[in-house]
Image (tube, rainbow, N blue to C red; front, side):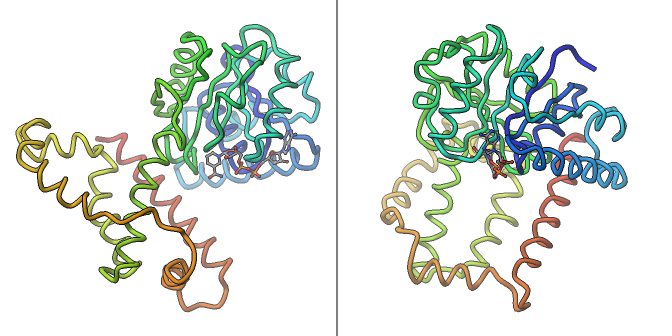
Length: 313
Ligand code: NAD
């Protein structure tokens, strides 16, 4: 195993995934939660998931499932969990008060070199890390669900985060096979969600205006834009669709502006349109929770195949 422990705080959906990703990269991991039963359940679930991944040939990393499982241990005592840690990934529920409490506990117990990283999807690093003694070692590393299959990690600094912390986190993420990007400063929603919300809001308006059905707008993405977006971003897509990005702007800029000027206001995300989209997305079967479970399993299988394909390209 590699030197030094990774500590995961919170053993829910995201904490378990991070534990598996770090173990796949050969790191020893301590999984901490306030409730011992929660830790035990998480370790059992991880074992089950890893065995299944190994059987399906989808296990990440070069170690066997047994070797990876042996790298992960549980703990419900914060102080002992933190001994020898080089990197802490916080994964408790998305609640500012709770996170503030956790960071102040961590601040009191960590050494001066360990990095304190948060999985938050949308809380502000400025608010979460303000005033901490170890603020220069603090950063947001926002994963995408499910992190085991979707490699992007958004790194978002506090204004006082040491650039060394950013670089170390960046290289650690690379080492475990994730794809980090660095935000130079924080912005509400970070970058992934800002792009995602732009897409969701236009999808909403197109359905609201009666242009297209909810099912068909999803097909535009999955069978159209998404085919390229799994490999190329919107900027390089444009670059390739003309003789470079500047040529693309010269050719299409005016048309794009004309269309953008027809975009409607920010949706209220409630009422008839929400109901219409919701109804369209369920199938006719009565068992709703089973529908979600089956579809999520299918999504994860697709993502895992796509990740394999991307490695071969
Ligand atoms: P979750 O509810 O599945 O897990 C949270 C875990 O934290 C639970 O195991 C709980 O017992 C534990 N916990 C609660 N209080 C604690 C404490 N004081 N000390 C230690 N552990 C404690 O939540 P999740 O979906 O894994 O989300 C965790 C974080 O990851 C959130 O900040 C969320 O925004 C972020 N995130 C979630 C997703 C997603 O799609 N679920 C994606 C990216 C980022």
